[in-house]
Image (cartoon, rainbow, N blue to C red; front, side, top):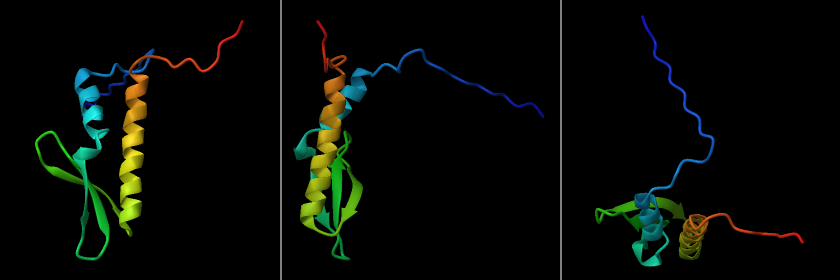
Length: 94
């Protein structure tokens, strides 16, 4: 029996594609999210994918915590988009 092993390494982070950036922009837009109430009384957050299908993400006990989860996801994707503009200077020296 023969096994094939493959390893990969990068000297820098993998490059982000335009498709990925477009997807992050889509997820960073609140109108692409919704909250539905489930039969058990919980609230489910969902996002609209690019094929117009709703994809469930999280379940929360209250509508407020569900909306907070969506806001947290939007913040997460906005941060990812911010770093696509290049390194962020946090301190300079003279």
